[in-house]
Amino acid sequence: MHKDIYYISSRYKGDYYILPKNSRLTKKRIESGKGVTNTFYNNDKITFITNWGQKNEKGTISYTSGIYLLNDKSEPVEFVLNNGFFTSGTFFNNHIYVLTFDPTVKEEQILKVNLNGEIVKKFVLGRSPRFEFRSITTSNDFVYEPFADF
Image 1 (tube, one colour):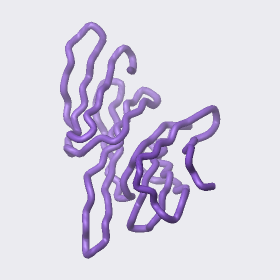
Image 2 (tube, helix red, strand yellow; image 1 turned 30 degrees about the horizontal axis):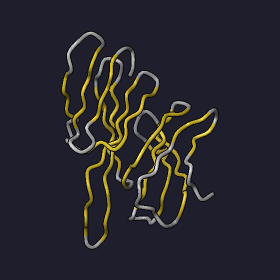
Image 3 (tube, rainbow, N blue to C red; image 1 turned 120 degrees about the horizontal axis):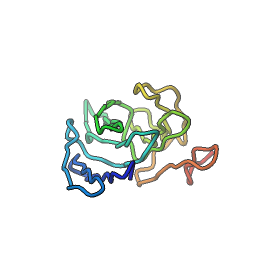
Image 4 (cartoon, rainbow, N blue to C red; image 1 turned 60 degrees about the horizontal axis):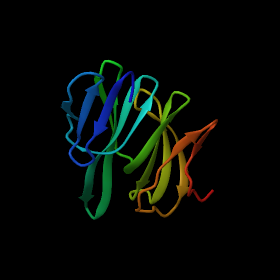
């Protein structure tokens, strides 16, 4: 919920719903039409982590994922990144952090992304990506991934 408005995402269809207090439910669609794996709130923006599915080019498996932001007027901005399958995200110190596994570089990473959609830092968690769902969150002054092998 953000400013008395509920945002509900549809995991596989790329749809989301806006339910303002004392109003009707409105269905919206992420223009790229891709699936949503995670939704969170940050500084007047609702953020959806999107995934575009698996690609196999010349025997190499890769993923395209994105960050879809809605500002306080529900106007969308989408950043498309070719850095693996994004499983979850969080917002911390004016940056978006996403947890991803990227088979093209055989790494599991947390990406630090600025609000222009640029990756400003990569934190490698492991050299062999895990394919189960994992998540990250923030607590006090830390971005936390509970199962990281640091």
